[in-house]
Amino acid sequence: MSLTSFIKDADMTKLATTKQKPKNTAKNSPAGQFQLLWEKIEKQKTRLVGQEKRVRKIVDRFNAEILPLEREQARTQYQLIERLLTFFSRKSLTQWQRDDLFHWIQDELGMLSTNPFIEDGLNPSQLLIRAEELLKQFYPQPEAPALSQSERETIRGDLYRELGLEIDDEEIDLFINSPAEFMQRMMEKMQANDQDWPEEDHDQRDECFGDEEKSPVDGQAAGKTLFQRLYKQLAKKLHPDLEQDATLKAVRHEQMQQLQAARQDNDIYTLIELHRQHLDTDALGQLKQQELDDINALLRRQLRALERQYDQVFMKDSMESTIWNRFRNVGRISSDQNFAEHTQALKADIKRNNKLLEQLKTLKDLKQLQEDRIYG
Image (cartoon, rainbow, N blue to C red; front, side, top):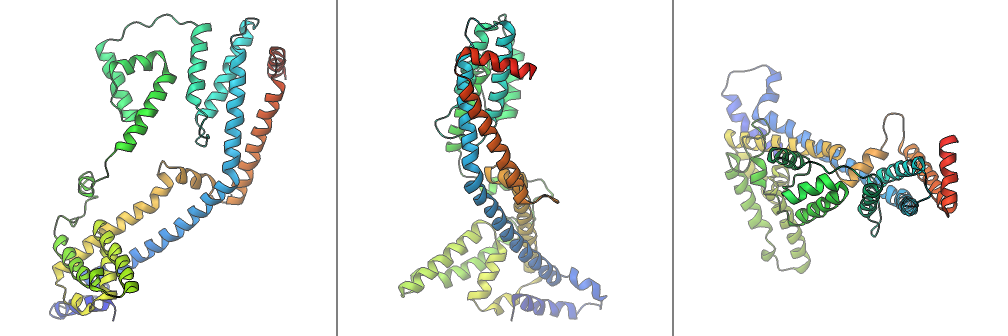
């Protein structure tokens, strides 16, 4: 007999003593709510599994087909910028030629800086700093007036909101006088902070939710006692030390890991599933209405978390989410078409970069290319 049947039986005693109500109110009873929530969680878990498979398929295909081209495109563009920078300080350049070269380098640097697939060993920040130094040399700017304290605090606040980092006065000066070097230092600082960031505490994270997001049962309120009781019953049953056979002991170990993960995540769905698999489910049939309400509150919370998890793949600032959103089926455009178009564009960029590298051997070559760029 299923857990739902037991819960329905437990609820029937109370329903039998109440005044007869229309049939359509049954789904609003605690047992009806449990059944509805349970089915929704099952569907959402199935939906998440399907989504994970689709994302994994797209990402694996990207890594096999696109990533090598992305890296080659970045590498050839990096080499082209290096080549262009070698011509910038040549004295025979006219003013318009130097201006055009500067804008050309800027355009290439802008594209390279936003490329997330640059290989290790290529440092776009170094190219930005070199370009900045040449800019100061050939386009000197009047010395900026000293910043007032209020202006410093404004910059400090703006950068904290943008980057989440606290910066000192020296770094503010660097931001004003050398933006490229400032960004390189901030990237190093953020990477160091990521490595030192403590593991998120679930209780502290829950405090960040508003009243509408927080469930009445969050592991600290009414459902905690019931959750702990079900957990302890299962822990006594599944503990590996109670099993002598080595093979069965390994199975018990995996089950205990699953149980502990369920407790860590407040996963009442998995907890009840394990309880139903390994214990006499009649014990769950004796639930009081308050306990069933507590379970339903936990299930509602878990359903919302699963729904957010599904939506996050479209919104997360991660490489996998970026790849998924770029190459998944959208409307009438298939993944195959997205892959084919992007592959074609990358190959065209690589061909163009390699051609320019072949053509840009001397200053005379550069001047001819500039003429071609302007007059076509």
